[in-house]
Image 1 (cartoon, rainbow, N blue to C red):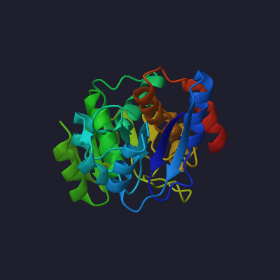
Image 2: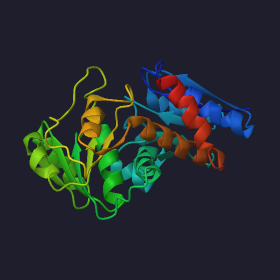
Image 3: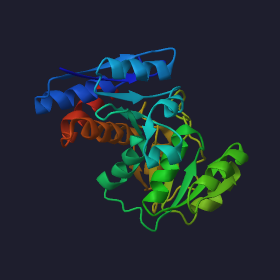
Length: 265
């Protein structure tokens, strides 16, 4: 039996176990997915390698810590965070499947990011992966953040991106094709990171928040006639990318999505 898992703290709320195990069951793979809450991420990676763990996902607060004990691929190195570790080689390799998760979310909704203008609210850890995903897919990215210096710092790392204060969002949205929420606003409270007035029916609005699936931002966007992409899709497709890397097989996306949304409902 292969063992896969997740390290982070806390991880008791994680939806990765039912999502991944639905994939194993669908394909008849003899595997389990378990969660760990280590105190030291580097030690956990070394222990997992010694114990022949097949693969690990990594979440807060360890996504940066594990960079020192894995060989990061180019994407993980640029983003500055690892969320997937593969132990199939001589040395653990680190990957960032959040980037793939964003791009596949838009592809699933038949939206081509090539040539699009995207406004992103938020410049934290999730924001880095989202901004790189949008830019790599051919979008021009404008990052806005409450602390403008953080937006400028992220924009300096992302090809063609610009940084802005949060107050610039309404003007930026006037000619935008995409709005991406990379903050946690809407998760703990029924609030939106922006006022509804700048939203319009030419937008695709992507929200990284997946609990709840229907955030205030997405409700406001739908009311304005915009297309919406909830955070469950990014969560699904980052898991799909990890699953495919570990197993070498096409993930059963429908089965994994059904399991995920059963737990999000």
